[in-house]
Amino acid sequence: MSQSLPSVIISGTGTYLPHRVVSNDDMAQIVETSDEWIRSRTGIAERRYASEKESTSYMATHAAKQAMKAAGTRTDEIDLLIVATMTPDMPFPSTACLVQSQLGLDHITAFDIQAACSGYIYALNTAANLLRSGAYNKALIIGAEKMSSILDFEDRTTCVLFGDGASAAVLECSEAMGLGILSSITGSDGSNPQLLYQPAGGSACPATTESVLARQHFIKMNGREIFKQAVRVMGQVSVDILERHGYSTDQVDLLIPHQANMRIIDSLAKRMRLPMERFHNNLEYYGNTSAASIGIALHEAHRSDRIRSGDLILLVAFGAGLTWGSTLIKWH
Ligand SMILES: CC(C)(COP(=O)(O)OP(=O)(O)OC[C@H]1O[C@@H](n2cnc3c(N)ncnc32)[C@H](O)[C@@H]1OP(=O)(O)O)[C@@H](O)C(=O)NCCC(=O)NCCS
Image (cartoon, rainbow, N blue to C red; front, side, top):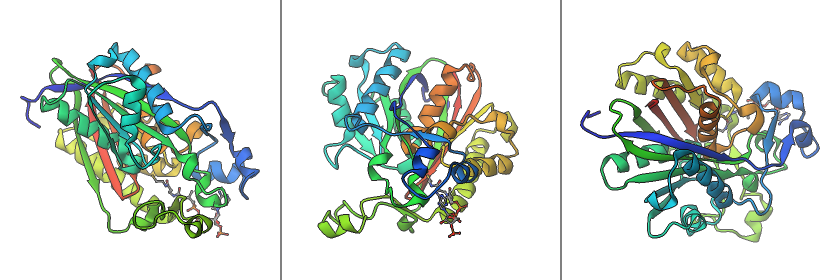
């Protein structure tokens, strides 16, 4: 990375989590499952479900307000807004435009990124590079998902895994040379989209009575294959970004992985030979919130003083697409 490019820091973070807590025992009332099965196979104890009024844009707007407050940023200073989501309020206009309006932001650049569970890192990377280019002054990035809107509550292999929520961050250039977002690596492989997808509702299979009756508007997943790929790819992309910046694994102060499955995170820790104390996990309470997950964990870690100036922080994600990404931050 060129040293002449300005530093970009995360100056504030925020989250929104719906109030409704759904425990594993609650899930067992809906599908044939048990608290024991879900905990032992995934590490999840409960998740949040949004109410009807809590759309993706609603949750995103609330997380954004909290992030701007934490950053001491006025709304009119934001000139770039990116929302990462796979559960937009509607196919178009973008959720970013809806959030822009709810925040009262006029005439800024607002768009969505669809990279499934890697969305937060894709948004962070895009915003950081656009700020470095000088095209914008302050960016708001948001990962927001209403996963409960695309869950099949007749499919126990998927519906127990996901939850709703939103996270946001304000990004801006800083004089603090060598600190901030060092860089990101993102990647994708679209050769096998059926590993994790929603078959209907797009142009390839528009909504019909048949598509609804065949439950094609819900998540379908090959869990075992996704599991294997997640461990391999997250391990590789973590090592790659550390090598790019000349760091070794044991120099990582905090690793925030996408919160999908505790066994995936355990395997990643073993592969990287990093003790679990260096990870921040909250999967137990929220399940997999897709594009929101890393931002929620980052916010919590920051709020609980787990992050100090100079700390080396590694974010790593994996999701449908397949997509993946890692971001290395030297906290300001
Ligand atoms: C989904 C996942 C938890 C399943 O765990 P697993 O150990 O691979 O379990 P299997 O799919 O082999 O299923 C084992 C058994 O449990 C059953 N089972 C599946 N879900 C169940 C549930 N919620 N409750 C009880 N039993 C369940 C299966 O039907 C199967 O039963 P069978 O042996 O009688 O056929 C695991 O594959 C996983 O987490 N994959 C990654 C998914 C992910 O993170 N996706 C998002 C990526 S961003």
